[in-house]
Structure formats: structure tokens, C-alpha cells
Image (cartoon, rainbow, N blue to C red; front, side, top):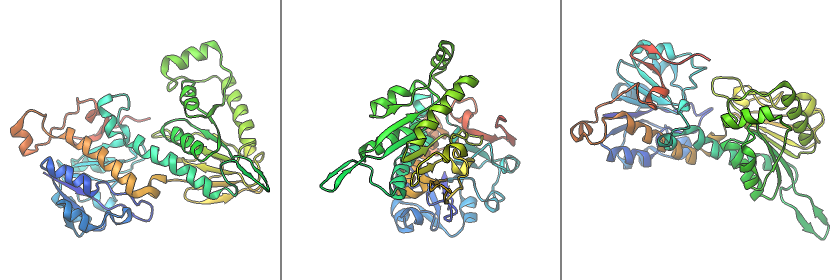
Length: 384
């Protein structure tokens, strides 16, 4: 069975779906791999490295589609490529399913499309397939470096004969994988870090990394709701939202660096920083909006652009940070895909089927069923 790798649009994406190391792993499992020429170039993986790993090189995406049973991609396939799909093929990638306008086409072509960002993150056996975590981890690290580059002062405290340099004050809004990595990185650089999240349970994680938790008063009823759901499904009261906004507003008014990480699959990113707060921030302070590509956490942020407000606040619209670390993010992403692809073949233990590498598509499987957005000519994605 052959797996294909489609080249991304390098103007906006430098990652590649499979790396040479991933090709070696797939070859050992019995797969063949064909990669579009130049697909890994922006991530510093030349065609020669893929050939050395045992992959074939195709001159075009059309050739890859024609030869492959499983097609891997970073983001959604280009429309001209989708048109060449045929019944029974499988597409695997971060397909942005709730914004994807091609799902009807995938279904009409008879292709099974798996959107990796829909992975059930509570399943222990799915952890090594979690593309959101692998990419967010790197993004949180890089976001701090971007902030340090934009900020006109150093992060750590310096004691010099000319005077003492105060450490930078960093505020992290959203304490998921990216936020926790941002806290750890900012602390390593010597900054004073504060963090906020809708999940009260995140307090312990923040403090374990040396950050200060921005505490918001909570009623006993709300505390019980948040605890019962782990913080993900509870709906805060209007009073809690107002109290949280006041706490965040005060913290940002004193901050040098603000990094926002909140994103919701299938929806626009929540607005965390409004213009009223921006006007209170210090000249020279920097905001890194990691959700700029999905609507933005910061009012006025522009994807892939840096703007400066009238009062001298710099807002960086960081729409695709993992692409800035293309070599490493591609390597982690490719490992995620390899781990998922192994679940698509015949069950372990059936040696004859394993040798033939026959597809074992099972929509009753808790991973495959959750990721499949098209199958058997139907769009399976539940609307939000």
C-alpha cells in the first residue's frame, strides 16, 4: 500500500506531513511512500533525504494522488488536487473541518477524510497521535522568543554598575499546552510570569512552573461546576466573566509582554483583550496573539502582521507559529501521523492481513470514528 505526501503552499506553510525518518518507519511497516518533489524543502528536508529513506519522488501532486491509497497533508488539500481523488482513497491531515468547504467534494469522490484535530484527547492510546498538543508545545515556546525579539528590553533582571534592570512582566492568557510551555520558557528567560485560564484546575499547573495564578473570585456553586467538569464544560456567570475581565485588565495594564493562546476548534477564537484594555497598556509592551488566524484573541490583531497602536503597544498576529519551527514541528507531526496510520491497517495479530497491509476502516472505532469527517460518500461531521 502506498502513502503519498502532498506539498503545502510554502507561502503560508513550511511544514511537511512526513519526514524522512517517518518514511523509514512506514517502510519498516511494509508501506511504500511517494512524495511530491520539493514538499520537504521549506522544512530543510531535501528530496535526496527522502530517496535515501526509501521514498519515490513524484513531479506533481497529481502523480502523488494517482499512485497513493493514503494521502497525507499538513492542511487541507488544494482544490485542484481534491478534484483528482477517487473512491476508496484516504486523506489524513489537519483539515480544519468546521471551516472546510471541500467536505462535500471529498464525500462525492468517495474518499475517507480524517481530520487530525478532532482526536479525542482523553483517550490514553491516542496521546501519541495528538497533533494539537505536539504543535502547540512548540508554538508556546516560540511565542515567547517572538515576544523577546519584539520587546525593547531584556527579560531577566540584571545587576549592573549603571543600575538594576527589572525583569519583564509576562502575562499568559490561556493555560493549555501552549500556555504552559510559554510559562516555562518565559521563566527560563528570567521573566516574572502571571497566568489566567477559565479552568480553576490550571492553578496548580501554573504554580508548579513558577508562575503566579491570576485568581478570580468564584461562588461555591461555580466552583463545584468547574471541578465536576474539569473546567472545560462549565458556563461561568456574568458576574464571574466581569470579575475575570477586571483581573485581566489590571494585570495587562502592568504587563510588558502578553501572550494569548485561546482557540476553539470550529469557532472563532474568543476575544480576551479589548481596545479599552489596550489603551491602558504601556508604550513598548508587546502582545503575541497566537489565535490571530482564527479571529484573534486581541482586538485589532492582523494575521501574519505586526501593528502598533497609537499608545505604542505592538500587537503581533502570530497565525502559524509551528511553521516557523518547520523542521521540528514536521518531525513531531509526522510521528503523530505514523501512529494514526498504523491504526488504519488490519488488526495486529492477523499476520496475513498485516503483510498485505489491507485497510481496516472502522467507524465504530473510537479514534477513527471521531476523526472521520467523510466516509462512504457521506459527510459525517456534526455541525456546531
